[in-house]
Image (cartoon, rainbow, N blue to C red; front, side, top):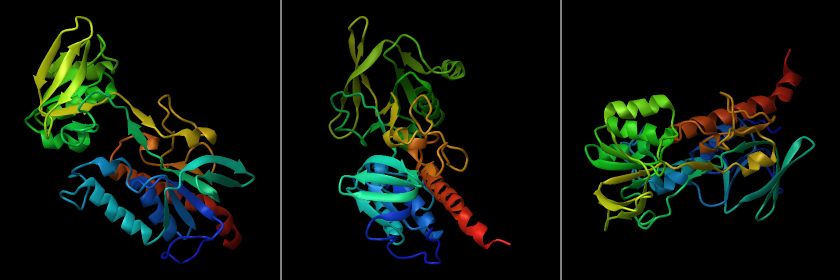
Length: 325
C-alpha cells in the first residue's frame, strides 16, 4: 500500500497501471472519491468511459448545490473535474469492459489496456428510462425533466404532468404540488403501483389523475407548452397545455461490473451498501446513483468521499498494525 504524505500531483501510481484504488466513473461521486483518496495518500486513478460529469452534464440549471446560487450542470462539472485533476489522474474514454478478482487484486480490462488495484469504488451511475416519444429528446432540459427535486423549483405555480405510477412518480407529484404546481399524473395502467400511503396523499391533495393514458407527443417550439395524450382503452386523443413534463417511469443502474464481482444488489439492480458505502464484497465500494438512495449531487459527493475514506481505512489496516504498539 502506498500511503504517503503527498496529496498533490497527478495521482499516477505507475506506468503499468497498478494502484491502491481504482474509481470507475467520473461523475460527482467518482470525482469526490478521487480527491479524498489522494488526500488520504492512496495511489489511484479514475476511469471514465466518456467525459467527467455524468447525468449532471444535461442539467441546464442547478440551484440546490451549496456554494452556487445558480450554475449550469456542465459548468459545475467542469469546476469539479478541474479540482479533481489537481489530485488524481482522470482517464477519459477508458471504459471498463471486464473486472475480475485475481488473488488479492482486482484486474480491470478496458477499451485500451489493463489496470489492477487492491480496491475498487464503483461510481458508474444510472440512466433514466425515456418515454421514446416525439419531442422528448428535443425538449429535454427545456420543460422535460427526469428529476422533480432537481428542476421542480423552475415550475412553481405552473401546470405540469408527471408520467408514471410507482413510488417515484407519486413522490415527485407530491413534491411538485407542495411547491405550488398544478399537477396531473398520467399513468398507462388502471391503477397505481405505488405504496398506499402515497396514493392516499395524492387523493387528499386532489391532484388530477389520468389512468389508462399515455403521452404520445411532447409539444413546443423552444420549450414545452403542451402534451398529446391518448387513452389506451378508448383511443381518444387530447392535447393538454402544460409547462413541464416530469418523466418517472424508472431508472436503470449501471451495475454490470457489480454483478460480475458478486456484489449484492436490490431488486431494481442498485448496489447495496452500508452507511460507510462498503458492499458485501471486501474492498469493493459503491457511491452515487448506482447505489440508489437520494439521487442528488450533494448525496453523490458525500458517498464518494465516504467510500474513499472507507477504502483507506480497510487498506491501511495491515499498515497500521505493523506500526502500532
